[in-house]
Image (cartoon, rainbow, N blue to C red; front, side):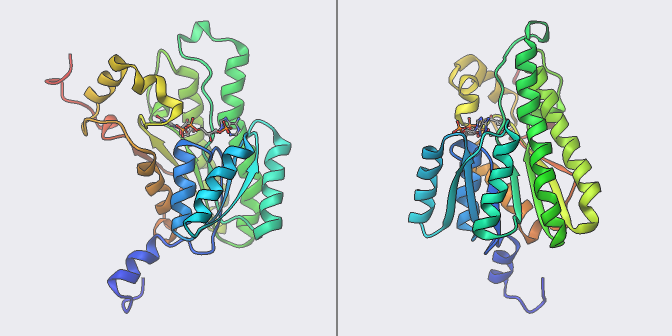
Length: 271
Ligand SMILES: NC(=O)c1ccc[n+]([C@@H]2O[C@H](COP(=O)([O-])OP(=O)(O)OC[C@H]3O[C@@H](n4cnc5c(N)ncnc54)[C@H](OP(=O)(O)O)[C@@H]3O)[C@@H](O)[C@H]2O)c1
């Protein structure tokens, strides 16, 4: 930042996404939607994608009503041809992609590993890891060609911890952290950054069962130093940092946003 910049313009500059093209998977709801809406407010042209076009179009309409620029695109992350079409449609409309947010993920199983079907295992690993591998391979070269780009993968604090109920989901989220490290090393010289965000429990449909079940919510809150669960905007804020000028020297890392859950908890408050 230049010494002559005023404090106000310096602050805007660090988080300024003006003119950037951002593609976000799973952006019709929850964390992805918050990332799309907040990035648009910071000046990005955002591609809102999920399996359901009408749901994406509703998000796009809201962004445009507030003066932002957005387009909707149906894309099932498990299908390679859908991912290729997402990239092609974005390039055709706005040119090269500056920001890629691999946000969509699934978890069709909650229980011990021994009870898990091969189909559920494949669905989790294919949706949460292979799709991100495919999509980042499609997008990183065009970022490299312009010597600029930010890839953000939404992982989970589950990727840092063993689990007796969400084990394969946690495995997939740990793999996402490694994918970001691999991308950081492979593309760093071309100024392409790749990082993960690892949310704790966030109030979205994805985790509804966990926060709508009083006993599970109480347990999570008791183990969280800040004493509450998170909101989608609290993840979007970090995505803006990683995508903008303020994040330009950060790559290969994972930012945990979990109310302090990974930091530990007071045994005085919890049995
Ligand atoms: N919420 C939490 O507590 C929490 C905690 C840690 C990590 N995360 C991670 O945060 C990310 C977003 O989760 P969320 O909580 O925001 O979930 P959400 O509210 O359920 O939203 C999921 C989004 O992904 C889309 N989606 C689902 N399957 C898809 C597929 N196969 N292809 C394309 N899009 C698909 C959904 O739209 P359609 O139905 O229209 O496809 C929707 O837009 C995920 O990676 C999740 O693992 C969440």
